Amino acid sequence: MQVNLKRIVLSLSLGFALTGVLVAQDARDIKTGMVIPDETYSDQPYIVKTNDGAWLCVLTTGTGHEGASGQHLISQRSLDQGKTWIDKRDVEPGDGPEASYAVLLKAPSGRVFVFYNHNTDNIRAVKGDSPPYADGLVKRVDSQGYFVFKYSDDNGKSWSANRVAIPMRNFEIDKKNPYQGKIQYFWNVGRAFAYKESAYVPVHKVGGFGEGFFTSSEGALLQSPDLFTATDPAKAKWNTLPDGEIGLRTPAKDGGPIAEEQNFVVLSDGSFFCVYRTIDGYPAYTYSRDAGHTWEPPQYMRYGNGQLMKHPRAANFVWKCENGKYLYWFHNHGGRFIREHKNRRSMAYEDRNPAWVSGGVEVDSPKGKVIKWTQPEVLLYDEDPLIRMSYPDLVEDKGSYYITETQKDVARVHKIDEKLLSQLWNQFDNAKKAQDGLVTNWSYQSGKFPQTVAAPTLPEFYKRDTKKLEQPGMNVPNGFTVDLSFNLTNLSDNQILLDARDATGKGWFVRTTDKKTVEFAMNDGRTESTWSCDEGLLKANQNHNVSIIVDGGPHLISFVVDGNFNDGGDTRQFGWGRFNPYLKSVAGAAQITLGTQLNGRISQLSVYSRALTVSEAIGNYNAQKKIP
Image 1 (cartoon, rainbow, N blue to C red):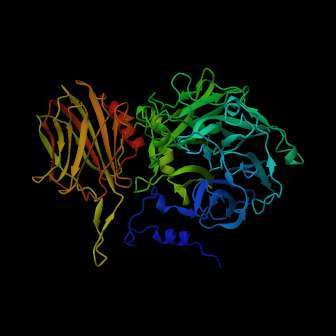
Image 2 (image 1 turned 90 degrees about the vertical axis):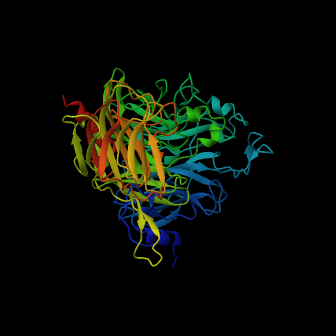
């Protein structure tokens, strides 16, 4: 009997602190997910629902690291939404040439296709830049060869013996590679899709290998009008889109050479939307109104309020849900701090934790339907900020939402809180003040400042495990939120808006800074953590609403100012900050003092004994606007 030791160890650890004591779980913590079996390396855990009700998952795996010899594809099935897996099969064997980066597509008939890179000619090295490759030869060979497919007519229990190569037309980027396109450099992570009678499979063309591995890239689509109907799938026709010899690139004015990992969805009017990663600090997107033949000039992604979305060189995926709305996975940092970095090709791969999600709804534009994006929420995280999660997939089943992801050695399935998604999709219309967890609800009546209000008891973040003899510490994923409205006659620094510290300095406070921002600080007597809102947001003699969200799961402090989530703007790579994971609590004074040093007036204070979602903070701001 084969035993998956990784699955056993990880399963035993679910719901336990490092000490082995049961603690409250945060479903956003990736360690609480259900493990998808692999060998060692684990990539692109993509899923389709088959006609017999199973989840069919395909993985790129192997006993070595990413790109190592022996990298190959496996499939397996689950009949219980990812809790257990059966029918493990090699799509390609581990002792053959590299087979990598598989995506699935189910035909209307129920036949399932799997598309992937295959090093059919068993080439052991290709030409690259020198440096970084001292001999000018790249011995990682999983991103060249042939783009191929197999298929299954029994819901993924077996795969066709024949492997079919898809003809892929050379673009300008191929003709400029070291082999003038005779060997094509490429790979794919984008989900395949169907539109009308055609099958579409994304592909990411590569111009060369060097610093940051891929030195230039752009997107294309392989389209087959008859794959679903051909008696012999090997005889299906294929077209390479877009028309011409230029693929999906970054914006012409300021874009860099990297435009890759294109992902596509089809809007209700038949428009194609595509989003992809860059090394410009922002993700790029574009629309096609003619089924992929031509595309609008690419732009950088923006929220519905016009604010640019930040993102590093990491997968950023878009999904269309069964309700007709959209979800967008990204990592919410970057900007000019990646674009202007001297090593941006490589450093942009970092910081894929947490994973954030934005909700999208369709709206009309002069050219057709477009997607309007909400401000983001934390979707998944690991307590270790150096853990990176990526290459997700979305599965909807029986009204529930599941996300897969991988750290490259562990792939998991996560059930997503439907309330979080509902709040995202309703964010543009939310104008209600949150009530759940509200422990302080003060509003100005009369009198001068300073004024006081009783300080609530707020939850701990780190405490002793008294059930163990040695009584070690353990993290608990609690949180709290401070929601504050004020008007300052000037923005001089060190105005103390709120102060809940005791005589020893324990507790928390909010003040202005010399950068004309609001800063939040908390102290447990041995550890202090601070973070501030973005610069340039506060104005003298103007009403402001600030929500300070302290989230003890991922250990984040986030600001929402006047209904806008702070992402650092042009002054910081990160708008959200991490606080010390060993900070015990913010217990301090018995009272909160409002306006100890204040040039202006505080109009309301709400304190919550939990971390509000960004959507709730925006609702609070919108509710404040309605008050005369």
